Amino acid sequence: MSREIRPRSLHTPGAETSATPGPGLARALGLFDTTMVVMGGIIGAGIFINPYVVAQEVHRPSEILGAWALGGMVALAGAFVYAELGARMPEVGGQYAYLREAYRPSVAFLYGWALLLVVQTGGMAAVAVTFAHYAREIVPMGLSDAALAALALSVLTLVNCLGVRAGSTVQSSLMVLKILAIAFLVLCGWLLTRHAAPVAGPPPLAPVAAVAAFAAAMAPVMFSYGGYQTANFIAGEVKRPEVTLPRGLVLGVAGVTALYLGVNFVSLRALGPTGLAAATAPASAVMRIALGSRGAEIIAAGIAISALGFLSQSMLTAPRVYYAMARDGVFFRAVGWLDPRSRVPVVAIVLQGIWAAVIAVSGRYDQILNYMISIDLLFMGLTATCLFRKRFRTGRQTARFRIPGHPWTTLGYIVASWLVVVGTVAYDPLHAGIGFAILGAGVPVYWLWRRRQVPREER
Image (cartoon, rainbow, N blue to C red; front, side, top):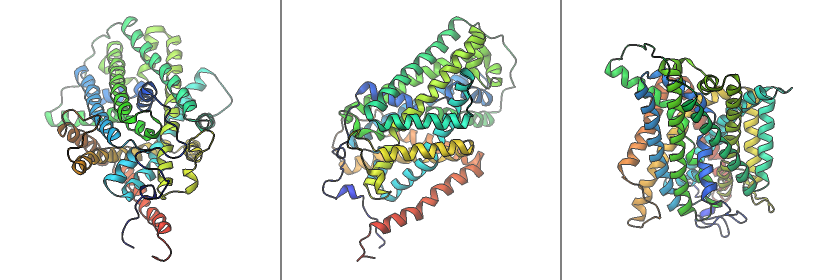
C-alpha cells in the first residue's frame, strides 16, 4: 500500500513508451516548426512592457542591458539542459516525463497539476486579456476584454483540435509576424529616433543595495525568457526529436535573446534610462516618437499578434502533458484519447482551453500570475537536476547532444532558477504561499488517483 504505482505506460502492453509515440501521434514537425515553437513559447506581450519594470530597479544603461543579456545566458543554459534531456528522452510530455523517470510519478503529477491549474492556464488567461485589450484598440467592437479573450481561446482550441500540422502552421505564421513586428520596432527605434537627452538619475546605491536591486530586476527578465521548455512537450510529434529538439531550442533561445536586446537598446536610445523607467508601455512610446500616433497603432497590432501567437503555442504544446498523465493512469482516462482523424489529444486541448477561458472571464489572472512564478521556476530547476540522475544511471552512454560546460552551466542554471524562487517568496510571501498551497493540494488528489490504480485485492 505504501509503494507508488509506476506509470501504466512503462509496463502495459501496447501503451506508449519512451521510444515511440502513442498510437496515432504523428511526427510531423521539423526544425523550422520546432524553432518557431521555442520562440513562440518565450515571446508573449511581456517584452513590449517589461523593460520599464527592469529600468525601475536598475538605472544605468549598462545594468539594464546587462540584466537582459544575463537573462539570455541563463535561458541558453536552460535550453542546453532541455536539449540534452530531449535528446536522451524524446518523450511525450517533456518536463513531466523527465520528472517521472528521474524521481517519482507523484513529483511529475504535481508538476502537471500545477501546470493545468495555474502555471499554463493562468499565463494564457493573462495573455488572452492582453490580446483582447490591444485588439479592441485597433478594431472597436461590442465585446468586453474578457469575452474577446474567451473567444480567441475558443478559436485556437478549435484550430489545434484539427491536427498538429494545423496548429503548428498557425503558430509558425503568427511567430513570423511577431518577429517582423519586433524587427520593425527595432528598425524604427534605430533609424527614426534620436538619443534621448541626458537626465539625472537617482544616486548610486551602496554595493549590497545594488546587488539586491539587480536581483530584483532579474525576476521580470527571467519571466520574460521563460517558456522554451514547453517545446519538449511535443517531442512525440517532432521528426527525429533527438536531433531536432536540441537544434530548435538553441536556435530559438539565441534568436529571442537577440530580439530582446534589440528592443531594450532602442528603448534606451529613444527614452533614456529615466524615461524608460517612467514609460509603462515603452514599445508604444518608442513608436510614437518614431512615427507619431500611427506608430503607436502599428505596435498595438504587433502586441496583439504577439499575444495571439503565444496563445497558439500554448494550445499546441501543454495539452500533451495532460495527455501523458492520462496515459500513465493518474488523470481522467478520457484526456488520453486521441481523435483518430486529427491524431491529437482533443479532450486535453479542450480541457485547457475551457479552464483558461474561465480564468480570463473571472478576472483572477493577475493574482494567478503572482502564484505561478515561484512554482514554475521551482520545477524548472528541479527538472535540470534530472540530467544528473540520467547521466549517473546511463554511465558513459552518449547522447546526440551534450551540454557545453556541464556540470557548471547546469548548476548555474539551477542556482539562478532557485534564487529567483527564494527572492519571489521573500518579496511576496502571501502570493507565493498561495501558489505552494495549490501545489500541495495536489498531494491528496494524487493519492486518490493512486488508489484507483491499486487492484481491488491489494486494497
